[in-house]
Length: 182
Image 1: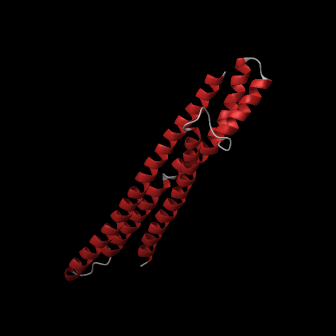
Image 2: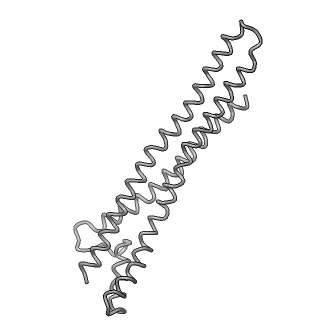
Image 3: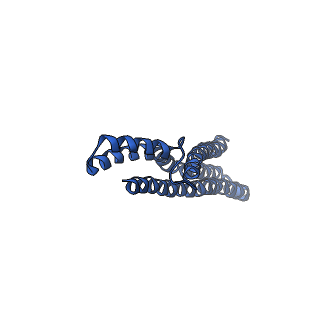
């Protein structure tokens, strides 16, 4: 009975983790979408976007630094700050996503434990079939939690990887704006 409780809690952990990661990815995705929309159809980003903020800082840097090397190194700091605004949470999501399959494996261990518990209760040959049935049920529970953990992890990881690609594209656009404008 206690093992079944742990298996149930495994599903709760998977759902909770997946929900948190999904919300983080949606938040980052909305920021990226807004940023991408700000750059479309214009020569530069809109005023209220991260790119707009960067372009204002870029103009200030151009006024402060006459040498291109000084200007470019200071701009790299600004660029790192802006990329970090979206990239740091994205990095954390990608790292923390690796926990989701582990929650599934936790359910697997609990299911195998349930199976072993049933094996220890064999007293007579006539009860063997009852115990084998219970063992099969424990193994099914064990592998279901692993499957749920992996099926939850894979799409979230693909979404996180896609967000990284979009962020790299946005970073390239910011760098091109600097290099094209100087």
